[in-house]
Amino acid sequence: MLTLTDVGKRYPTGDRALTDIQLTLPKGQVMALIGPSGAGKSTLIRCVNRLVEPTQGSIRLEDIELTKLSGNRLRHARRSMGMIFQEYALVDRLTVMENVLSGQLGYVGFWRSFLRRYPQDAVAEAFRLLERVGLPHAIDKRADALSGGQRQRVGIARALLQSPKLLLVDEPTASLDPKTSRQIMRLIRELCAERELAAIINIHDVALARQFADRIVGLRAGEIVFDGQPSELTSEILTTIYGEEDWDTTPEPADDEETDEQEKEREAHRYQSGRDLRRLASLADGGVR
Image 1 (cartoon, rainbow, N blue to C red):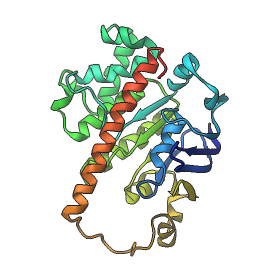
Image 2: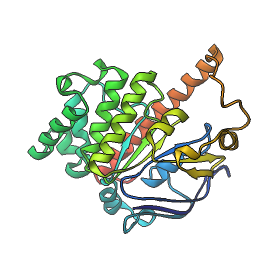
Image 3: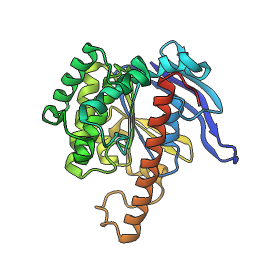
Image 4: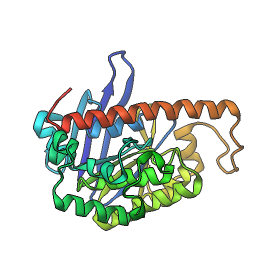
């Protein structure tokens, strides 16, 4: 369904983020992308929906060559790709229902969305989705009144309101506690099975990837160094992906310095998620920038 051939990304600084990526993702498969920070996981996801422009290669979604699209043709193709962000990218002052309905931007445009003029069938589907993700009681709550797990559920419902064929999921559990992380990954997995959706999930938690993905792809320095089933992910392969470590012991709690670093990374993702959502909204309204 999704095919990447010789995909590469080099930034104007000369830094190479991706090198000759070859991937085929069939319909209904949940694929986890793992690898150290800076390996190119988020860049790969953003190349697929063209939030980041690849500098070489081919990206095909079914029979559509995504790298050759622009303007309205690209806007229409993006309807088929729902994106779920690490930092949720919700509009805090809007209600849960209004945030979910923003998933219709690719269909109704910015101004109809701004004026809350949504088709009735879209509104009915939004109600059904909020029921499915476990938030029927929160329809009229403002987004800033929700917990992290609830906010991620809103983001999932918003992505599904696009009626996508493919989900692009960028670190959906990085800001969540372990129990909520498992619930969110289980929900994504179940929804993909129910709707025969393919998904690419960028995730740092190897244990969650093993538990909920059909396939794991490991990136290191912008190159694929592993592509296989979760059961094939051995300690030796983890060392190839991440570097030398004792993968059979329980990790020590993070110290304050590591916590500060994680907070900086979350802030960077929060900023990037906001930029991505604003750009998608602009493009949904017919603008290209």
